[in-house]
Image (cartoon, rainbow, N blue to C red; front, side, top):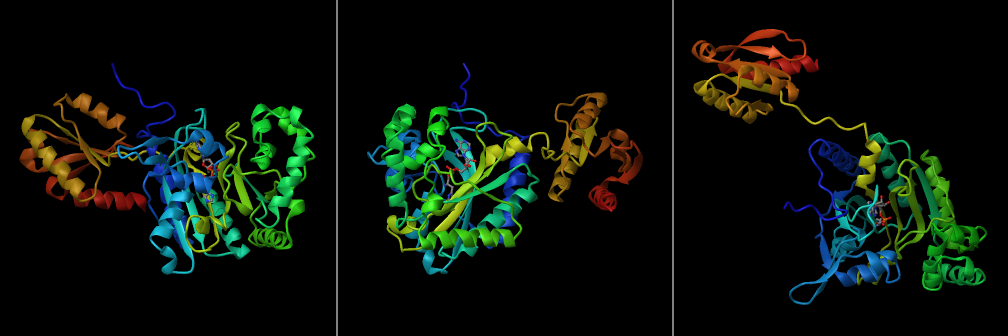
Length: 421
Ligand code: HAM
């Protein structure tokens, strides 16, 4: 019996991987322009790292982590997100000693035990970026400018940017208390989950999808009306810079993030093309996080993009896989040996060449060349081996031209260059 993959964890196959490679290469290029360097952290960390950063009462920590004991009884967790591991590495490797500002990006698999559905998986991939060391609202706008440019460059337009401010440890506690009191009056209207968490995580109720919770909180007090002077000014300045950079955004005062480390600016890139999984990217500021994990008191801000969701949005607009530039059809064993040497020489010269290994008829070989969408074919038989010449067939316009086998690589290069114009 064959063994299937784990539910909610997907293979990424040829034909689809080209879109992934395009999305990743564009991220490297765009993020590089903004001065970000790549960081890679392990897929597994100590469980404590996520409990302390994401928050004990969040959905992620309460029910979605892949946590297990290793053979030495250490509690380990497959990373559910990338920010905490990057902070751990930043502190452990004292990256703050290299420069007062650190700009880091990462890409890779994350793991959450969620109910799989379109756009939501148990292994999914994020492309994320984090900036450490800057409190100035310019950096909030800069990070959003980079995210905006990334979406423009990958050709995804059906997204809108929503921003909010979640205040800080100065102003949030009073607001939180007011919200708890508001919710207490309406407990019977809330779903079971929210009745349980309205004290430990009241903001989460604002984000609940249950109809009763939505209705009960339509006129709930808003964080934006309770920001302290410094947070209010910070948020206004972020908006001013976004406007100056011509980045479209809307304020969504009900946006609540599912991770506890956020303060001040939070944001989401949302789309109406993916049903209920509408966030394609999300992030925000986490000024106290580095210090709470044992590092220096440095502010931070970042985001993560859900790559599967981008791939779904690219949909029909897929990146075409590469095709062979030359297919060599060989007739007979000796020609096949020569074709093999010729093909490898071409590959060494950087030309994508292909041949048939099963000694099939010429007709079958040409069928395969067509199926692979090869640009050119070359037929190699006894005659051609003797004369050292063969016919190169252009598969697009069916024209043929003679070619000296010893000069095949150069001839092909000239043709490709001429075609590129
Ligand atoms: P997050 O909102 O939990 O934030 O995830 C960011 C993005 O990852 C989501 O907007 C979504 O596109 C994608 N995503 C999350 N869960 C899944 C899933 N189960 N299946 C498919 N895609 C998913 C964070 O993870 C923060 N670390 C972002 C951040 C970075 N904040 C500051 N810096």
